[in-house]
Figure 1 (cartoon, rainbow, N blue to C red):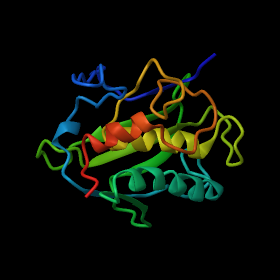
Figure 2 (cartoon, rainbow, N blue to C red):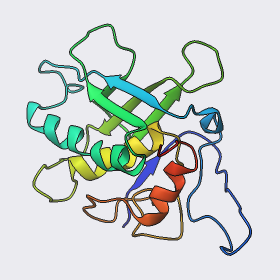
Figure 3 (tube, rainbow, N blue to C red):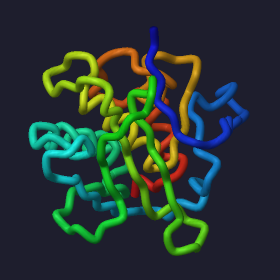
Length: 187
């Protein structure tokens, strides 16, 4: 059974014509087209012993998952951890039923540009940092795509943004890169 990720939004297919029949990526419909040429996100990980806290052993895997997106955009995108307790951008665990992970995006300042997020791991699953199912870095790589504005693809299981967990992925597919570069300048 393929486990599902979700971004709460309707599916929005991006069609292009020319030498390529259509784009093999999908942009989230909730403001992704308003993305600036570059963006910097910082996030906080809750600490403590409650179910929502992120284990210390996950920190490097979550951070490692930002690099492919940053590289793909020529560093037009930057994502880093902060120890600030006042940040609205959070990564935490909660019960998500059958979902592996979920990203909630927000427009905190009301300017029609997505400027905040919550990434949630399912507290009902066991995650690993050594390439076993369910892999922390693979889940983070997928959820960072949502944070940056990509939606799910449904036809290509090799894509990071595929609508289901299909095993460990550490690199972006060329179509994931096309999608992120449709929004953020590589220069």
